[in-house]
Image 1 (tube, rainbow, N blue to C red):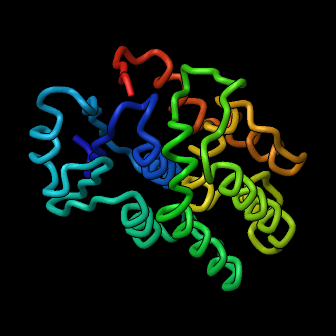
Image 2 (cartoon, helix red, strand yellow):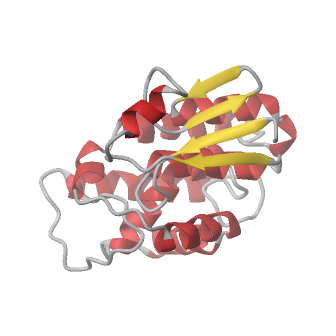
Length: 216
């Protein structure tokens, strides 16, 4: 048994689980994982055995339990500073934290209307109220970050190299591909970078073959 265990929801659907899993994967530490299928009889009981919040993801490190995606990512950044889960530049780090928090609490219309479903393709989906505004704001964020980053590296992510901000927005990239969202070249390149990122590919491959189905 490894020191770290992460409790996850269905990989095909659980965007919040994906976020923390990607950050944990980036640290390079060995970890165990357990998938608890959501919205099934007994799901809440199983989750309560791990956390009083009864929500995924849940990170266990020894006797410590941490829940909530962003809290888990912050904890991992503290535990593994060498992984540079936040940008090293002060200004970039502040921006990365701000957009991660915005993702954490915002874009409710998009998240409700375009559920993450990696097995699904719906390019003819007609967005509901507020979704276009969310898409526009996300596009602004991605363009700003790609244009402004300077000290983190020359990689394809929001600040060059991977940061927690990329973990937070990776499920949005998945949604944009599922629902055939029309994007400018900067955002399209970023969606492609997420989908060819080895950690994301591994999650995606597991998600599309898992047997669990949620009928929303």
